[in-house]
Image 1 (cartoon, rainbow, N blue to C red):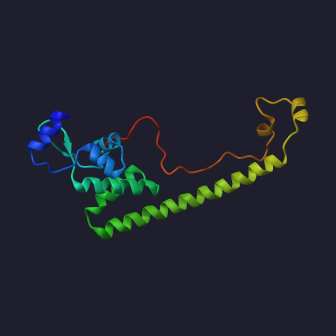
Image 2: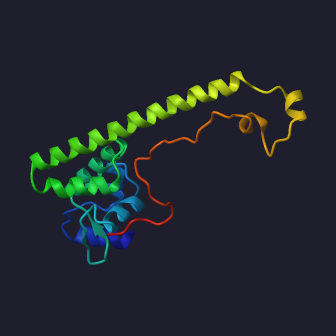
Image 3: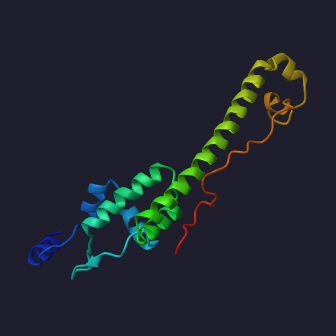
Length: 170
């Protein structure tokens, strides 16, 4: 730390260290590095000691990414918005409107499916098999689930279908 402070003090610092960026944006340092790796953020300038120095624009972009994620946008969609914003406000706003419209349709479909599932669960509860009757039957695991003839598998549509574990690199 002493060497870093000396180096930063000796040169006129024109940027933010990763810890400062993380604290101000509310995005963990590891995530900042990941966003840099996948191209959501431009690579920062480096000090002579190879420390990252980020611009004020990076802090604002991280705040934008955090808000966009909170609205249900994927990193791929956010990357597209950032790319589109370089073409101007009009195409960017058009893309965001399309993405929001798509998200609303998915949410509405998911809500409908969840309401169907809630109704089914309430029906199953109202038709609960008493323990004494269940003991007389033959079930692989649980009679409350196996005895249901009407139950259909859920069709909830996720926002982003991606296998867990491997991160998308571009």
